[in-house]
Image (cartoon, rainbow, N blue to C red; front, top):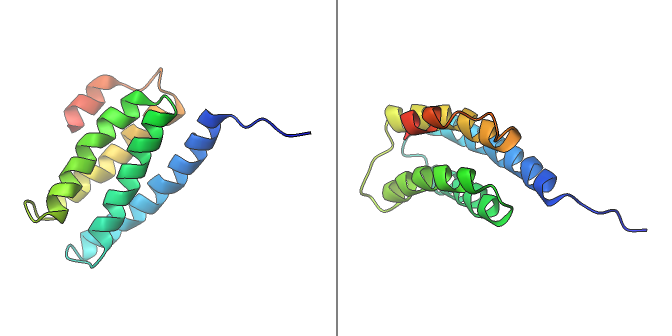
Length: 116
């Protein structure tokens, strides 16, 4: 007998792992802003959180994360540098993304707007 998987639960688990990985990557970027591959690693984690979020109905997560993904894409393309402010803002944003995923009904949109 096959066990039915809850897609939202699967997304929550995968997103939690990606957010943990992203946090580690951001802390590494804080120490070494020019660290090879770190910006790409952060971008890929954000891209996956965004894309999977949209696929599994976490539209608010996808919309919010899209802005962070764009910021890291700007770094990748040389239009923006990794700054302590970018790292701090992204780290603060991780808590908001977690709230949007874990309990979207109580995630405060005003917090998200302030972060953006």
